[in-house]
Image 1 (cartoon, rainbow, N blue to C red):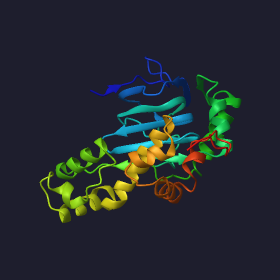
Image 2: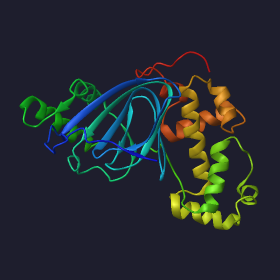
Image 3: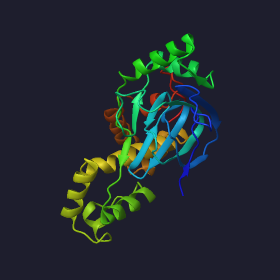
Length: 268
């Protein structure tokens, strides 16, 4: 059962304590924060490590130095791949009016990264304090210009299509084509293709590629080498996986999971 958290911005009596608040935590590989929801909008930032956000609508993977937006009252869980330095900002609902009312992963500029880390030095920030008001306003202004990145895996609601989803989530390296997968789901290939397009806004091939990309990010963050990851997510060679990764994210796996300064960790 999803847990509803108490407000971090209002006192138990209902008094407003601030417009923004922060929580910082360093979490071990494999740690899972169970499903819960907040009455505030939330910006979840990965200073290091990879986080995987899950809701009923799908999965979002957050690499290092990226963030995910979580609207207020959205039940979600978070799993850690690698050692994660998690930095979270909570916003009074409607403070960031320009941001969409659904989860999405975003690129974080160098300036916004430093602002997030600076804001996390405060338990709460209030517009009643002029210095804190400026921090709030600059962060909100910076969030207006963020770019979303394609690191989400939406789930269909159709029960037959979800049988295919569960099969591939359990084994992303499964090489069976859709026609063979459909034999166990109770629907034709054409029906499942239509459902994926209508309910996830992706054709099945694109959805499967996205699954492999996100699973690969999780494995890389946990310390797996690129060659092993490529095979585990269903590619016959590292070059095919690296090519797909570069096409989707504009960089190589090693640079994406490097030290945040463009330097690659050793070994593939």
